[in-house]
Image 1 (cartoon, rainbow, N blue to C red):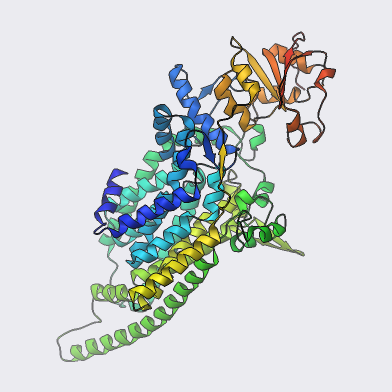
Image 2: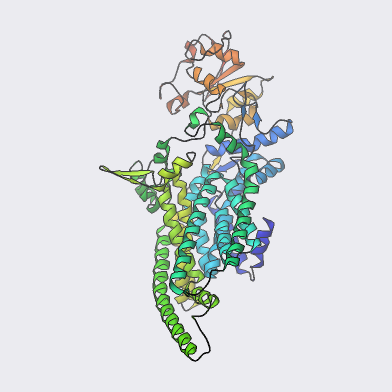
Length: 639
């Protein structure tokens, strides 16, 4: 990683990059404000999966300090405990290593917040380098960085999904994919393979996306090669097998580097794939997701075209489309707004590319025709025979297909591929069923359910195209003053399209509910069950405070999960006895959660714990009550 950054910073030949990157950082501070001043007490976004992330950071420190295994967690699903596939947070590399160090040095909340914050300037910087590779225009690259990083997609996942918010590595991988294509040497191959492993180990979703992205790149390269041979290759030219063999070796090195890094850290995943049958669902302990999830969490057309529902001005209009077939009902996953500024600039890039391609194609044909006439004429004089050689054809082709054109051509194609993959498995219109790629991929990889996340690859493509389009416009603006005014207008318009402030999006997590303070003061090592009996993120988060074992948190398909299904209904006469058998001393009852939890017998119906003779009220708090388990032990029976 250090070598990559060193290579980048060598390209910083003046102070403009420093100013631009400082601007990205300041913009990150603005959109997350006042997080920078409350790194240990607040979080960006709202409580949810973010609290689970913080819990895992804390668990690493707790396990280390108590000489426990990172993978076997006795504090959850007591008394059996749980065993996770990987000690790191959803198989991350960069986030886990940095978070572990920060948790030990400061605390787990600080570690989480810093990772979320850094994703904003880093994503903008990596996109800057990707676009600069095609445009050599710093200002256009800067705008692309803003479009990519400070997008509603990034904001929403930054609220709760730490690993999904780490979007900064994909532009780097795309950059070195092009570098490897342009200069097929071992250095680029190693960096390309390494970056693919970083993307994959940050979140397996993005590894899957980049696998599809790479497949699209290979298809596009093949198409480019066919065009080259059909337009400029001499009939007598020979295939250079030495060059092809070298290319094969270089690509093989990239693949080996990626596999050597990825496989050791994901071996438990593959073991699980082999253990469970292909169709076994996650509810039974398998990895497959139901096909219905793909429909529920797929992208919708309006998700790409309408501002986010949390936009301070335009959001109220988008809210009217929630739950509609063209928008969806899960904003955190289906908010994919690309921004009309980016779309329009992309159209400019595509139009310029098509126009230039036509002009250069005509020039190439004329040039090639003249070269044939010259070669025949000289052949008649006895000086030259044939149609030239491979190198001259390659030179003509390299003039035809510029880096600019390659960028537009591929990211247009790659964006369309990602768009199709983000849609639901099939669309039914009357008796007609239109299948999308996700339907067929589900047969191979049934673990992927949130198709809408493919939207980040669409956004990546739009960001590159927008930068290329903007660069072409800036070249036509004569004076620096006019250029500055136009650029300022574009940046302000992008920020207005994407902004979700006011209000600022931080939440105070330093306030500890009194029930957990009381529980932390109770002596001894005992087990607690929190009702509703579910793996609520707050149950885990506040376990950091009281550090008592919880019955909650059983993994689907395990014996502990089957036991929990027997004791979900607290009013069942056998439930207190089973709880006693499991070693539970107290039950924490959260009455308000019964109005919204999915893990209850009847949604909205709050049970009367006082009617359960096996429980004794111990203490009442504003948000919860504590009951002591006084029933005799009963062994749980299974059907």
